[in-house]
Length: 563
Image (tube, rainbow, N blue to C red; front, side):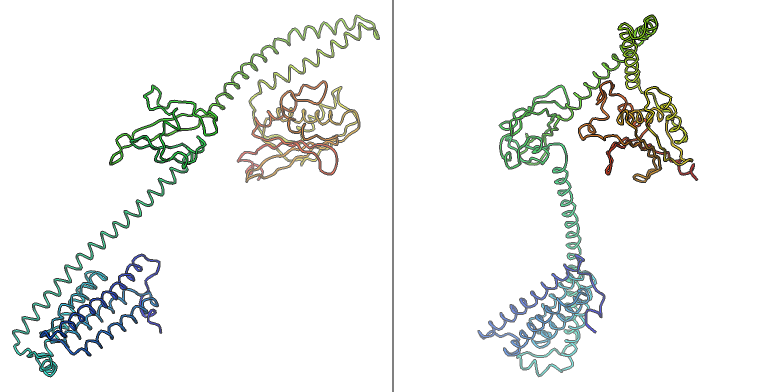
């Protein structure tokens, strides 16, 4: 079974795992460097015949080579495993054993390399914090005790005699040496673990603070770039230091064109004089020379350093707002004119009725087929047409608020067809077919729906003309965007509509007939929209004719009612 499956894994995606792996690599590097420097200096001084208690040069060389090989193998194995914490415990224990071997074979209690125990203790404190430091301190203390015990038992006498040093024979001296070394091991472990934990905590807080700053900087940059308000900042010398995307859209300049230049040279309109308004307005000249109205404001930036006169400007393009204001003013004017026109039209009805009534009376005073009788017929006919135009205009200018209720669509359609067939202007050659379910109900103002269908049927009859024709009325329930609606279609077999006519078909006073008012379909659109619906017109695809359709929404209680 592989080694990395014998231990609990640490996820490679964890920042702590990457950090521990990097620290282990540093431990391997420091192990080689420290061993090489200490033993190298020892060998150098030994060759100059200083009296040092060391082994032979060959033994030192073998120790260094063995340490190198083990370190290289450990570094290669580090890339094959993912249980870094357990591997760190193994490495520092092996470091302790290597230090014990070095002390044992270089004079035991007389060894000059006892200090090397501090390296694994400090490493374990950095890698594994207090638990690792105390573990290595304990292991180093027990290892040193074992070395002293071996020396006192006499097993190391041959080696020590070869090193020109006398073995330790006094138990009190050994106990003193053990106490001093053990206490120093634990002191180093405690101090180094405290420093390591504080360093780890400081690094964690620094990392968190850095991440927060990065997120804040990213948020600031995103807001700065995506906000619809133009933002410009200048330093104490009035040089532009930042220029966001919206400022470029408003002014037409790119950031590279204005950065580092004085703001008064590029935008002299942005005055810093105090004004009575909170957001003054000015005409700003864009890069292409056009002038646009902008609202702007500025304030001082409280920044550290030499930024006493630093400022930030905010600006907003008011072109659309100005156009909207003009449209609103125009709409108010048109509403006033429409109200006045409605009043004038209403006043026209009384004298027009008098003229029409008098003309009808005088019409009977003249013999038929005379020129005077023909003129009176024209007066009566035109008075009737003018009365219809005024009625349509008043209906269009002052639409009634719909009073919605449930009603049968088939009944309303049959009623409307009956009204049309009784009229004198209806073409008797027209046939009207209905394709409407008997129990299909609609939620709207029934009177206004009658007016809508009446106007659409008259429009279809006018499109067909005096020729025989066919009109089909159909109705059904549809679902649009999860909303239940009622759709009513009126199709004819007339000539259809051109694209130009279809574009303006619902505009007020637009007509293709000589005697038309141009208000019938405009009233249809107005009534449909007042009931919350939508009206459309299309041409038939396979044959001539047009299809007018309108949809009316059903209330939320429609499903309950149908159940």
